[in-house]
Structures are given as structure tokens and as C-alpha cells.
Image (tube, rainbow, N blue to C red; front, side, top):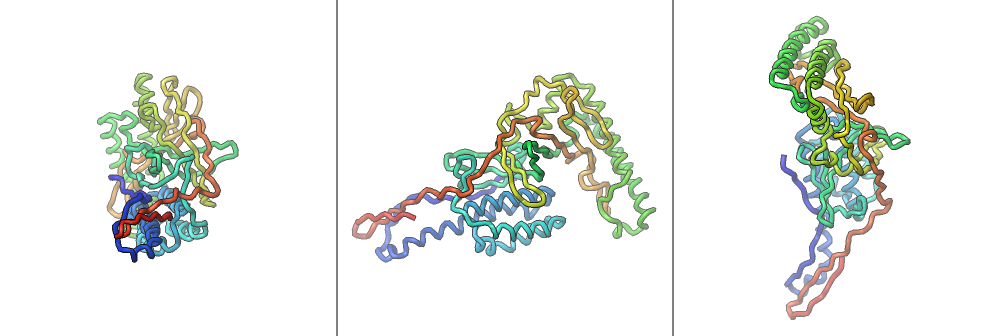
Length: 373
């Protein structure tokens, strides 16, 4: 989907106006409020139409940043309809989202966001745009930079190690062939038949009362079969082909990291830790191995375990007449500190105020006055 964003900035300009407007010149500063509301609407609207487990943590980061940039309680009040739509769309996280919306109000309203020595003037939501790697947000800076931020839920350990679901690959990104995928679809089709039989035996013929997405041996067996086939395909590759698969899964492109920064949101406290991707792994020196382990595909560099991919149905085996693919939206999780050099980023406790703006006003008489806000 295309980016949508608003830049929160104001430029100097000359007003040819009547003298009486001088008395209300300070009203120009009101532009800051609709600007923040526009940023709020632009950045959060995508979450009102698509649901994902990670949305909660992305929204937490967005609102925290906007609060630091000057988002007020009145701005939030003016957009309750949007916030309610987000809650309703992300139905499995309704309580948590409402808690985030309430907790943001307890934070002080800032005067500007300085992120790693860059003054942030705008935010783009990129959660569904793969062209920016794993970045969920793009921060626009006053010095014309675009900083990508990948967001995840997790706990940063004392040694600053971070584990993250880095990507949600399909089977094709593992180099699986058309023949492999046809076999996956056959496994998927058979699993639906077995799943229906299992659920009927346990819950009766009325599908309307069947619980959704419960763990079953049917799903486990199907995903394990797919995992085994992917391992076989990977093993058949040349060393260069194996390295290419690893580069694709790790979202390393043109020798660049998956994003500029990583934001880790604590599940219980909603505190946020930021890191910069400071150095990327040299995949060319690796000896990649992929080992099927039940529903998981374990990644190794030589004998060192570096991460795993969970093979799964995209939205459960079957529910109320709907099936989902076993070929897409798998979960690839890696211990990032074993792969990348991550540099902790500490945001200032008191952010800098934005640069003062000078407005030039010209009286009808030709007299020029300057007003700073």
C-alpha cells in the first residue's frame, strides 16, 4: 500500500494583510494542533483496516512518539472514532489497545522528538509495505533523512540480546518449486478433511459452535510434512543458493540491514527500547544448514543455531467454511544480537523544542514586522 503521512512543520512566509490581523498573530501557532491530529490520523488509519498481532506494539510506539512531538489529550479526544475502529478491527487485543490509549494520556506532552540526534518532523506508516524491509515506521527528519524503524514485542535481556520475528516468509522464499507447492496444497486439502472429522467427533456437526484455531495434531502433522519437504529442497541447493535463501529470509538487501532501527516493546510494561542496526552479518562466509524439527525449520550457521521458522496455516486449518494457506505467512524468528551488531539508542528524557519560527507580516503602509512563535 502507498505511504500516507503528514509532515509536522511550518515554514516562514509573508502575509500582506490588514493591521487588525496583528493582534491575532499568535493564532498562527494553532496550526500545530491540526498538524498533530493529521499525523495521528495518517499514521494510525492503516490499523483500522488490517489486523495483526503486532499492531498493538506498533501503535504503542507511534503514540509514544507523537506524544513527545506534542500530541495532546484534545487531539486524542477529537479522534475517538478512529481509535474505536482500531479497537474493533483488532478484536483480540481490545483491552490492551484501550489500555495503551489511556496510558498515553499519562505521559507528558512534549515539544519535539529528537531521535538519535535527528529532529523528527513526520512519520510514515509502512507496516504493510515490504519495500522498506521489515520497517514498520519511517521517520522523516529535518535534515531530509528517512529512518526506518522495525517494531516488535520482546524483552531485552541484561546483555541486550533481542529475539525477534524478523519476517513472515512464504514457501517460495525458501526456494520451493511449483511441484513442492502443489504437494503443500495437497497436504493442506487432506488436512481440512481430517480437521473436519476431528472437530465433528469432538464438538458435533454444527460448525457454528466449533472453537476457532485450536491446536490439533491434524495441523501439527500437516505442517511437519511441509517442513520436511522444505528441508529436503534446501539440502539440494548449492552453497551459493543456500546463502541466497538466508539473505532473503534475513531481509538483507544490497548489503543493508532489514531496517535502520529496532524498537522493542515490553509486553507487560509497554516500555520501549531502541537499537540501531550497526553492522550486518557477512552471509558470504556462512555454512548454512536448515533442519526440519517438527513444525519448525531450524537455521544453523555450521553448528551454531541462529534462528527458526515456524511452518503454519495462515489463519487456521478451517473455520466456518473458510480454509487458509499452508504455504504463506510463516514466522521466522532470530536472536538478532547473534546476527547483527545492535547499538542501544537512548532518547533524551527532555526533548529539544522545535526551532522557533519567524513570521513576517507586512502592514498596508509597507512597514514590516516580525513575530516569533
